Image (tube, rainbow, N blue to C red):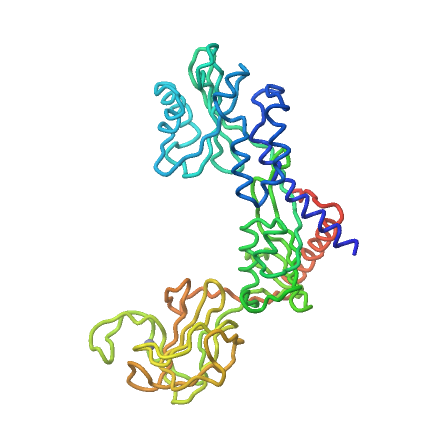
Length: 450
Ligand SMILES: [Zn+2]
């Protein structure tokens, strides 16, 4: 299994990059300003332990030559990184570390040319630069600051010889590349992804992309595996500063490999498609009953029983008692039981975002209960008039993140199947992705050239 071994190396390289970020924090202001033996040395040695281990990372902080008192001994300019707390303003942060208010205000005034100081976020890091005082008093003379509004930009404020501050935007040299991570699932996809060094946004995207087909709480078994290629942006030192999208993923469940490709169609529709050009998304049925008449639309209406105006948050389909009701899409039953005015009620979760609900049923189909997986079109129950209802009908709701939407107006994620020219274009793109993916297994990382 040479390929397996190589994959392991690829994953290792991803984690190695993460540890590089830690080392960067002790980068000297000027080349050679830091004695690596006393400053960087300990940090470099400790970096690998800190990965995925918050306790070790915390220890690392202590060992950082980041304290103004340590640094004043060297007489060389040094950096001190501060992190914005809740409610902090840039001014309070600077004054807190001992910078004179006048200097702080002047530096921030200069900064405003490139960055609005009010946009500072909790947790954001600002690097301050000081020249140690001859007398050794901390923190020394304030020379300027650096902050990154986003992963691609850096704003630097420096003090001139006359004492005034000027700001400039530093363009970062960034490399967009592809990374590959693979793993076998022991207990959960989350754990396996974490172990493989998969960044959290990638894991979230992976689950979202597959959620139309896979119930991650039920379908995942020990021995299932994943193999993913995703975009990442690294700086000149190879540190990952940003992760982009999944370009390709293969999820192997019970021996069946399910591959998906990210693709933007000519009409600017970006989605994941399987190898045959079928979108991974599954549209929800708009009419989950046969031969039914739409008897009440979504919106404000005079309630037939209560008599006053009330918002109707679904569609009503009038149909004879006992008419079969279909699951609008693949999913998992979250509720199947009595639900107040809804009467006998079913709710199906289709993805992390979408659910559908069915009310006033006369009875449930055999085997329908909470936790059960259903396929699109499967009979889940039968039309009735239970709960607050004047006659046999299906009350149908589409919910997005728990809130009802007008099912007729929902821009239903289309389960598009590429055909003709679109399919041809996809096949070319797919071959290119396959090639990059294969190459990545052997060479670990290739610039995508974008
Ligand atoms: Zn209704």
